[in-house]
Amino acid sequence: MAQIKDANPKTPSAYLRVTDNPFLAEILQKSHSTMIRNGNELEDLIAENSNLNVSKNISISSFDPSDYEDQTLIHKFKIENQTSIKNTHVDFLLINPKNKSMILIEMKDGDNFDTKKATGEIDKLENCQRHFNKTYSEWETKASIVLWNNEDITQASFKDSRAKNYIINGRTIQNTLGVKWDNIELKRKQDRFFNTKWLIRNILFHLNQNYDLEEYMKSYTIVRN
Image (cartoon, rainbow, N blue to C red; front, top):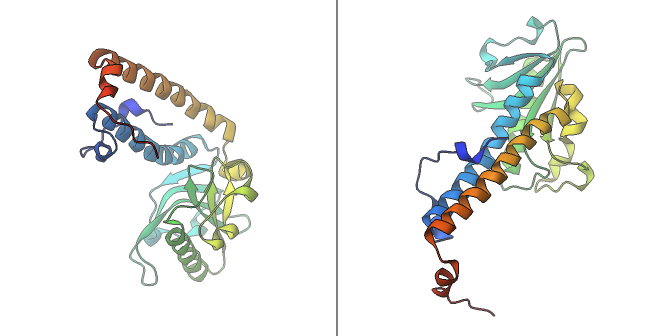
């Protein structure tokens, strides 16, 4: 898991609309930035720790699944300059030459799929799947959306009903990806510990250095309904 202390947002914090304290606004912004980076880091950890052959940044323009003799995991597979589909990429493409099958995989660092982008992401995945099945007609191509942290896929919420055809959790797909879920999460747990320590230390230090908290709060009028 990414560490908050390493976050370096490029724009002023929009969280100043939430709190008028610049330091707290920065903390919130750095935390939000880190949460987003966690998804990219999860993909990197899977690629780095998979016991499969792993490649990265392969483009469909130079891709032929028949070139692969062993099961291979491609990280960041690029789909570009195709007449029937917009330029895009999938997080992973798994190739299994033994049974001439492929899986298009999108990773989600969460336990639900209920964001406003869900429909667009499923549209993209289905378009990619159709394109693969047409272009590589001798191969069977499936698609999966991985909710990495989900413990019970039957309880997952999603905004688009089509998601139920694709969602799978991290523990279920771990062997397919050539990784151990527990090993990946152990690495991330270490960063969660450092994040907690960093947040508490910095907030307490800032408050102790800059505020008499009771005096600070006197300037606020709390309105209760």
